[in-house]
Amino acid sequence: MQELEMQRAVGFSLHPKMEKMIDILVQHFGKSDAASDDTRVMVFSSFRPVVDRLVEELNKHKPLLRPARFIGQGTDKNGNKGLSQKEQLQVCRSQNIYDELIERKA
Image 1 (cartoon, helix red, strand yellow):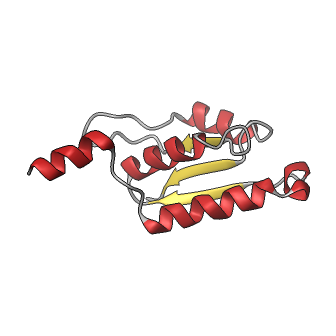
Image 2 (cartoon, rainbow, N blue to C red):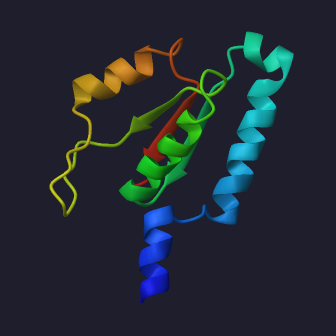
Image 3 (spheres, rainbow, N blue to C red):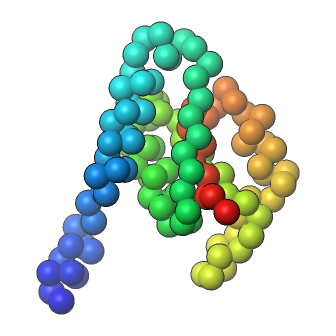
C-alpha cells in the first residue's frame, strides 16, 4: 500500500500507447512542412479522465502542440460538465488556435 501512495505522489507513468501517440504528434508537428500546413489531429478517448491527462501531457509540448479538450454536453459521475454547444462551436471555429482536439467518444 505504501508503494501505491509513493507512486501516486510522484505521478503515474503514461501508458505506452499514450507515449507513442505523443511521440508521433511531436514528430509530425515538428516537421517544418507540417508547421506551415493546416494540419489538424483529432484524438478520441472513451474516458474523460484520459482526455484530461492527454491534454495535460500534450500541453507540455507547447508551443509545438496546441491541444484542446473537447467533450460533449453531458455531466459525468463527479459532476464535471462537458462543453455546451456554444463552447463546442467556439473550439471548432478556432482552428488557428488548436492543432489537436482531444475528444471523448460516446
